[in-house]
Length: 316
Image 1 (spheres, helix red, strand yellow):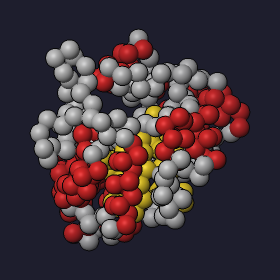
Image 2 (cartoon, rainbow, N blue to C red):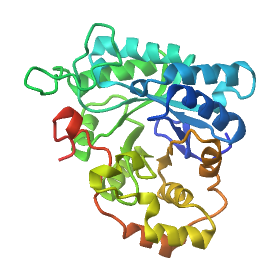
Image 3 (cartoon, rainbow, N blue to C red):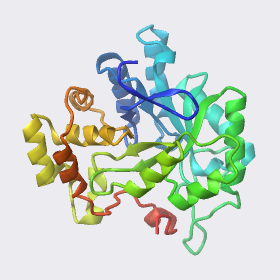
Image 4 (cartoon, one colour):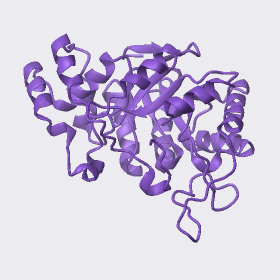
């Protein structure tokens, strides 16, 4: 592996920098993954079934691994179990479906995408159900506990389909509950994290439990900025001043900040120059003063909030 790694509680090494693929159009996701792995020194790709681009990413993996450009064991691949497949009898099938789409024999990390079980539209449908509502407009949930789902996730390790398991978007209270019954402890919690939503207390708690944090939306998810009056993290004046000081882009400062907090970071891009630029963050360090200045940007501003889709105050 080219980039520095963090050792997970499962014993495996996870590269601190990964390519995110959320909202990447399928054809562009394929090209982006191939470019990242072969021309931009990435060793880590973050995927999810609900992103609806895993088949195309699988084609990129086939070209890269099948063509001998990279070795499979040198690349860390994450995917996620979607909410409609939380029933224990569905977890194995959903994982196998993802492996088939990605054209892989195993996943390095498999995450529960959210802590809510949603109703699927039809048997065997592991992608749809997003926004499935009843006649009153309320989300159709399934009576499946996180505990039952986690039990099935643990089995994936035992049969060799997955090397590490974890969660995404779990709050502190959800983690306390999960840790009360786990046989295999979650290796990772993937959460929204950037200077406007730093989640310092949750990160401290997770680290004390030996759980690694992956920071998603590290650049602030500009597409979701309208929720907060078009607040754009990449245009923050303080960050621009710091970027100028280091002769770096604001995006590079944000990625470096996440790494210096000892979190994994997965910026998304489908543009070759941005993919390459986002990886050029290992030749400098932020000063203590600059880290403190960024700490002062905290706004408790969450760009990814499922309330509008779920009708459930998930993070409240």
